[in-house]
Length: 249
Image 1 (tube, rainbow, N blue to C red):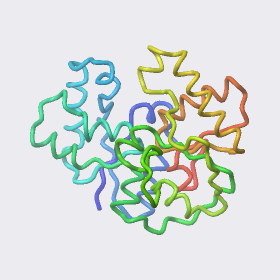
Image 2: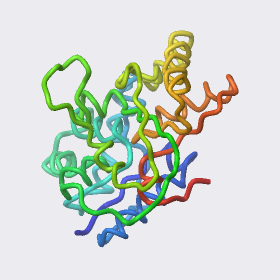
Image 3: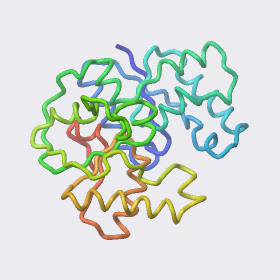
């Protein structure tokens, strides 16, 4: 299918390798992928901070960039969650409504839309701790929240990573705990945010993980800052990088 590739602004600026991995993975699965060059931000930072005016203009621009695509895929649970459920500061024209319905997060696209297809063979011989963002768990339902006791439990990220040769997923004490980032929360409540990040990264370290893998680089940039300051022997990686076999640098 023809896919419009949504690369969140912070990934474009700080983690271009994640965007490259997402593009290559979708292409290796046989899809035609286009990345609109005019795209900027989805408007989530402004919306979360209560700036509806700035968010409105940014959201309208996002919808205009992707109006020609029936399927839009992006490697960020929090951004996709915002677009689908909270992109409402701008006028809800038929075009905007259609774009909101068309956007898919990479993991749900692979797992749900493509029904967990055989992925290109890759190896990642490391112990990996899985971090699903709050938006991915409780917004996009990519993993069963721990407060729900129904069985069987599920994790769409784990289902995909099981195809990777040599990868060992290590269990956490609190598998769906928040990392403490929360966008502007990490600025307005930096002490609480930092302590939550330290607790979260310590859980991974305690269980022998070599890497923290996630579908949200926003969480990982926060955790990486904690890890580097505490000199923890941990690395962070986006799930798209693992499934594509790189690039990692």
